[in-house]
Length: 70
Image (cartoon, rainbow, N blue to C red):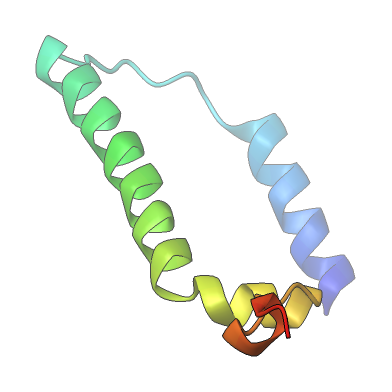
């Protein structure tokens, strides 16, 4: 099945005709907003799951008892 999908994509690329399209100036600013919004969403997701990410990597904070000098 994957072979057929790859063949179909290659066929579409070589048979496709050039599109006569117009992108107005607002389209560029919309694409910039989408990219910046995606970056912000990734940052928020990392911030929300920061402790789980650190635990998965193996980095842990020192507990308060380790810092005390007896």
